[in-house]
Each structure stands twice: as structure tokens, then as C-alpha cells.
Amino acid sequence: MIQSQLNLHGKKIVDINDIMNTINMVPMNYVGNKKKLIKDFIHPVMNDMDYDIFIDLFAGSSSVSLYNKLRNDKIVITNDLLVSSYISSVVLIENNGVDISSEEIDYILNTQPDSKDTKYRVLMNFMAKYDNLFTKNEQVKLATYKYNIDTLFDTRNEKLFIFYYNITNIIKNACRIMNGSIKYTPPIDIRKRFVDRCVKYNMCYSKTYLNSNNEINFEKLIQSYCNKFNTFYKKCYALGLMTIAIKRSTPYSRGLKWIDRKNTKYAAASYLNSDYEIDFDRVIKQSIYPVFSNNNTNHISFNMDAIDFLSLLSNLNVDMSNTLIYIDPPYGGDNSDYLDLYSFIESYITGVPFIKDLPYYEKMQRFTSYDRYIYNFNIMLKLLHKLKPKHIIFSFNNSSFIGIKSIKKMLSHYWNVEIHDTCYNYNFRKNDNRSGIEYLMVTHQH
Ligand SMILES: C[S@@+](CC[C@H](N)C(=O)[O-])C[C@H]1O[C@@H](n2cnc3c(N)ncnc32)[C@H](O)[C@@H]1O
Image (cartoon, rainbow, N blue to C red; front, side, top):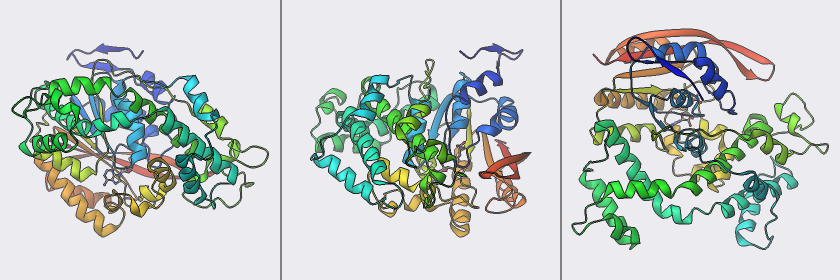
């Protein structure tokens, strides 16, 4: 339990060492993850700011969101377009303490699917496409785990709720941000989409959640969806665990071909058995991570394109006078194409073998090349300016898409900007440490 006291102004003083001890219990293998910068760089800046709502627009591993959640005095909203990042945000941030049991983990690891089952055969065919990355035994294991996760955590009934879930998330955020209550009349197009959907699928929910005037009783809807999501949270936990295990046991998360398994320079080597095959059972068991309760708050995770998300908030006319938006986008240098970096994991979770077929492929390219970056960054700045959040923090380093002075110039067009910097050593490759300068660019509402 993290202790906190009040200072003279009635603000909570958080013990950053307690928070860091908790964050360090969570495996967070993620390119660009800010875990190591929280204690001495991010915390001193955020701790001096006064805000109630924290929005992590490019949440990644959710390290900075977890820091805010553990402070116990913030509402945290995460967003990331990668499904694997969204899943880890759901588990660490949105999930209110729903865990999976050791029996459930045993089931996932040890249940043998019927080899004639069509779903299992589809998974085996899918895995066969990764012949260049995984041995036959490894393919069988990965197909088996995915099959067992899908069977054990059958979210089909909850899927009926996914649509409501997205809508209610939006509404819930908007209402809470606006007046802390869920009494809110959503814009007409959202109401219309909701009603159309109910009619189209003839959902029994429609009777429960719509009154005779076709108006939505959101209060009832939200209450009931909250109780129905245990299986969804468990499934996210299981998939999150698989994601961590794959990242830990494969060099660069298998973004590259793994040619020489006997080459011990790869961290992955520690998870190989005597046949140089990945001991998935061991790495999964060693990757089990904690979940955290929300302490009477609802935190929420989104899986949207950042620009679409900001546009949505803007269309909903949300009041952001007590909000800090944290912007940690891909920096535009090496390793900016996150979909390419984590292509196998995204395919494994979604079941779509070619990343170009993913519906979010195009929008994942917004911050991967110089021209697109400039164009999309400008759109983002305009939207942020329109939203008027109390504070915005941009995170960049000295190998970002343009020099830090030029980024400051772009931001200064809209806001007064204050810059904090720190030297940072990061692991570029194993045994190859490089150093750089990390910047936090803070804007305040005039
Ligand atoms: C630098 S990382 C964020 C790291 C994070 N702060 C952490 O501590 O782990 C940038 C993130 O932006 C996400 N991303 C890239 N393009 C996006 C888009 N168009 N909309 C939303 N997220 C996007 C990537 O998936 C990646 O997780």
C-alpha cells in the first residue's frame, strides 16, 4: 500500500520510492519506455503541477500512466493504437484488480487442443507462416496457448458489449471530465449510432437501455457493463502475459530474423532449453506480473489513433481545465515504426498475418517518415490548442524528427514553453550503451 501525506496546500506528497518499487515489479519490455526516467526526471516535473486528470496519448507500456495511477489522486486515461499496448494498458490501468488464477495459467500452458479442431488448425496454419522465426515445436506451443486463451476466456457475449463499451467509455470520460457525473446528453450522432446498432442486431439490451422515446439510459448501461467485463480483463491479462513472454524470449521481439540461436549475445538465450528452443512455459511463469486496484476511481484505456482521439474529445466539447495531456509519440528517428517493430505480436493477438491488412495500418504510419510527421504533428498541435488542456507535456530527445529548437518554435506558436532536460544512457543493443538528452517540453494554458 502506497502511503501519502498532505502538504501545506492540501496536496498529496507521494513517496516516489514506494511508487518506483511497485512499478519495478512490472515487466515492461518496450522500445521507448520511460520507466527509467520517471523517478528523477518525470516525477519532479509532474509533481509540481496541479491536475486531476492525466491523459497519456501514446501510452506504450503505460509506465507513466502507472506512475499517475499509483499516486492515487488522479483519473488516468490511456490511449495507444497498437493492440498489444492497449492490452497492457487495460491490464495495468483500466483493470480494477482482476487477476488470473494459477489454475487458469495451468490450463493455458498444459491443455492439449484437439488437433482436428478447425480453430486450432487455423492457428497452426497461421504459425506456419513464421517458419523463419520459430521452430515447429515453438509454433505448436504458441498456437496451443492462443487456442487455450480463446477457449478459456470466451468473450463472445462481452463482444456484444464492445460497441456499447466504446461508446460508454467516451461518454463516461466526457462526463467525468465535464462535471464528475454521468448525467450527460451525448451528441446526436452518437445516440443515433447506438440506436441503429440496437435495431440492427435486435439486441435484448436495447429494451433494457433504451426507453420508449429511444433515449439511452447511460447510467444503467454503464453499471451493467462494468460487471460484465471480468472475462475481458482476464483475457487481456493472458494475452499481455504472452506478449511479455514473446518479447523477453526473442531478440527484438522477433522483429528481425533470428539466425543464430546459439549466439548468446541475445538476452533470449537465457530462455532456451538444451535443444536451443524457447522454454515458453518457463518464460511465461517468470513473466507473471501484478495487477492493481483502482481505489474508487475509474481509469480508462482507449485503442484509437491519437489524432482521432483528440478530434473526438474536441467534438464532445470536453472541458480540460484540470487535465494534463502527456504526449510521448514515436520520435521520428530509428525505431519509430512501432507496428513494424512489434509486427509478430500484433499479428499473433489479432490473428491477421500481414500487418498491411490491419485496419489501423495507415494510421500507424503517421509518425514514421519526416513529411508525414510534420504534417500530422501540426494537426495534433492545432487540436491540442483547441482543446485547451491545463497543461501539456511533450517528450522528445536529441534524435527526434527535427531539432529541439525547431520543435520549441512550433510549440511556441501556440503556447509558452518551458524546457527540462536530462542526460540519459539507454541500451541501444545488448552491450552497446548510448547516451542522449531527453527533453520534457511543458506548456501552460495562458
Ligand atoms: C515512444 S512510445 C510511448 C512510450 C511510453 N511513454 C512508455 O513509457 O512506454 C510511442 C507510442 O506511440 C504509439 N503510436 C504510434 N502511432 C500512433 C498513433 N497514430 N496513434 C496512437 N498511438 C500511436 C506507438 O504504438 C507507441 O506505443
